[in-house]
Amino acid sequence: MEAQMEAQVTEARPRDREATRRRILDAARQLFGEHGYEQVTVRMIASAAGANIALVGRYFGSKAGLFGAVLAGEPSVRRVFEGDPATLPRRLAEYAAERLHHDPESPILRTLERSANHPEIAELVGERLRSAVLNPLAAQLPGADTYARARMATAVFLGIGAMRRRLGPEPPTPADVERLTAVFEACLAEY
Image 1 (cartoon, helix red, strand yellow):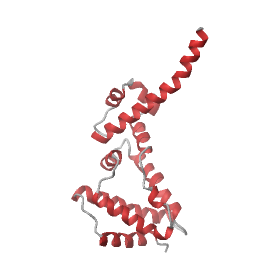
Image 2: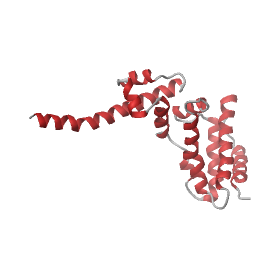
Image 3: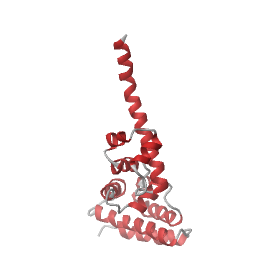
Image 4: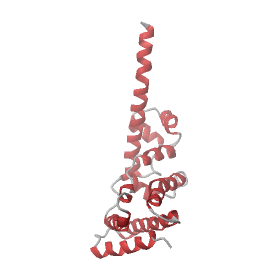
């Protein structure tokens, strides 16, 4: 009987761990999205998740590690890179023009825009930029210097986000899309 109870407890633990981990991630996503990285504490996250504060450290290592885990689950621009390489500049232009008008849909990506230079997460942000944008875009490009070309196109995206944050959103026009298409063609061209 005791062995049977021990087996049941042992079987339940992995599910509880995963459920607790998921609750912590969900709480962190919500709090980071609402308040930004700087304003959220590990204690706030643990409380919102109904978990012991020590579990955040056990599962994620640190607040920055938890932010990295949340960030890894967020949408990326990769879907824009997929498709006919000949129409890639136009797809990038349409995506960029949409960013002129709207903040990123994800509250975490909005937080990322505000907190990218925070010393605790700067390295995570750089890695996310490389893994979610630069490397996948470079992989779609033929020829030489693919990373350098992807870097130029990414700089355009980052500049658009910075402009929208400082000047406010503006609805894109068809001419904006045409201009951005020409910019992305120039960024991605092999010289």
